[in-house]
Amino acid sequence: MSHPNQARLLSGVAIVTGGSSGTGRAIAVALAEAGVETVVVADIREDPREGGDPTPALVERTAPGARAVFVSCNVGGSRREIKRVFEVADKYGRLEVLVNNAAIFRAQTFLDVTDYDLSLTIDVNLRGPFVFAQEAARRMIKNHQGSIINIVSCARGAAGRTVYCTSKAALASFTYSLAAELGPAGVRVNAVTPGLIETAMAMQDQPSPVATLRLDAIPIGRIGQPREVADAVVFLASDRASYINGASILVDGGVANSLFLPESAAGDGMSRG
Ligand SMILES: NC(=O)c1ccc[n+]([C@@H]2O[C@H](COP(=O)([O-])OP(=O)(O)OC[C@H]3O[C@@H](n4cnc5c(N)ncnc54)[C@H](O)[C@@H]3O)[C@@H](O)[C@H]2O)c1
Image (cartoon, rainbow, N blue to C red):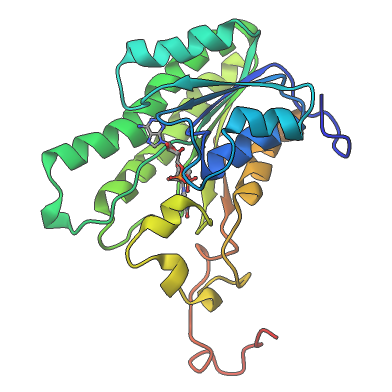
């Protein structure tokens, strides 16, 4: 059942990787409120990193009539492990949406990155989404319908984040290639590109960017909330975005496309009151 204040935009089954916490959790709720009948949460852990009820309970409370199920899955694991998620999803009907949201991040200087660190991050942040998209595409092509959304990052390059930024840049490029390949089959593939969002991932970075960032570097003047990313995902997943394919929506308060100048250097710029 869709949220009482929201037109029903979506239906069928959606898979959200990393849906137990943070942004993925908000995406699961928002998809259900928009009309998705079953949300499959594929995550390596069931309890939210930030605390609270597991996502299925939250979804079923906030979107009465919607169903949500948790499937334990390491998205960086084997294809067999990933296939199990789809076998569960298949029981509930037609797969209409896949959101590749799960990712890991670790701040490390370049010379400290080990082979293990490199493989782990690439497996979770890139190989996993690739395999999830393959399994989803097999189903969506048959239906000539579906939407795949990859969560990338506006951090295109940053010191101490070589592996993470590389994995996300590759995921963005994958999005554009896949959109070109699957568009003729009726499957749209897009990315959502968050800026700094208030989740456990953002808080774990040491020193925490939430604690140290000058919020006036963000044109909107504040950190983003998971729901603000989720709303962009719902839009891209829905028919309201029927001619949007191979795109990326920035949800970053304007930070990626702006040049930060401290007010003194910016001259007579408008100050925030
Ligand atoms: N928070 C930010 O500031 C920010 C900024 C840009 C992009 N992003 C991206 O947004 C997405 C969501 O991030 P978040 O901030 O909500 O992170 P988070 O750490 O709060 O949540 C990530 C979820 O993914 C799950 N996960 C981690 N490794 C997994 C694995 N191997 N298999 C399955 N699940 C796994 C975690 O258990 C957790 O539930 C990620 O793709 C992240 O890169 C976040």
